[in-house]
Length: 122
Image (cartoon, rainbow, N blue to C red; front, side, top):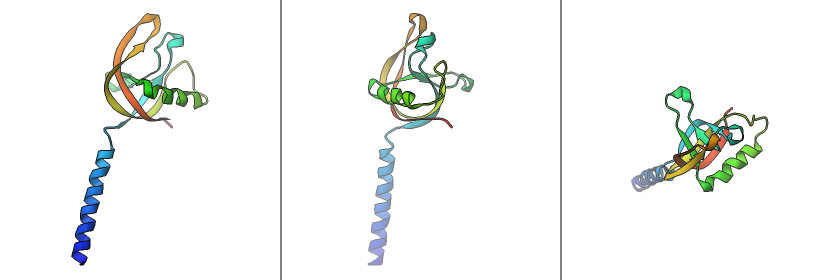
């Protein structure tokens, strides 16, 4: 009987371990810069990797995630509105592109992401 219980627990643990891997849902966590600087000839709200890390990569939130990012920006205290802020971002890649509008009428097409969680880097 003890053998049956042990094997059952072992199988249950293995099954639950596999389920946790499936729940990861292809999300990633990364340190990026967040900027919303169209007002000062920068670019509209977008995330980008630090240029110091090699090639800088920009991406925008999906329309469904934009409200979450705007809410985050509204709640922040003491953040300069004339430059980027460093954040920790948990996101899920999508197969879609988004438009990144910049000063002087420039428009680029960049990857769009689903923002799952965003917090200011400490």
